[in-house]
Length: 138
Ligand SMILES: *[C@@H]1O[C@H](CO)[C@@H](O)[C@H](O)[C@H]1NC(C)=O
Image (tube, rainbow, N blue to C red; front, side, top):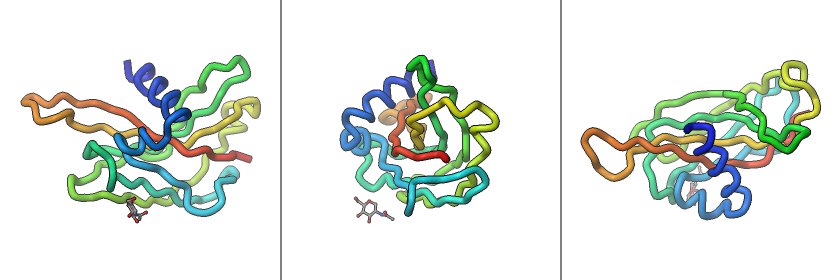
């Protein structure tokens, strides 16, 4: 379920980044988006204009396999976030993805993947969704 939910979110994000940002917030890579293994880079997640208030924010990578399927997720960081925190800036270190997974995965995206409570139910209805930014892994 989780996979299909994020896959559809990613597909939608490619077509309608602004819409996804309006729902799930925006993620940006601060500075150059070309990053090599071992390099530390800074990312900013911003939910100021998002419809939903995140409980958690995960930063993950996903690319495209040679057969066109999306790659598994590479998890960079998982974060709990307080209800009044709108911005999360974090330094991340790029793992050696090319050695681990091969060099034939392309079109990498940095995804900020959130969980949030849908409206105000008890017990809560917890949803997930994400937005993405292109990242060039060299
Ligand atoms: C977060 O987004 C809001 C609304 O677009 C913007 O005004 C603010 O400057 C952003 N904050 C950061 C740290 O990027």
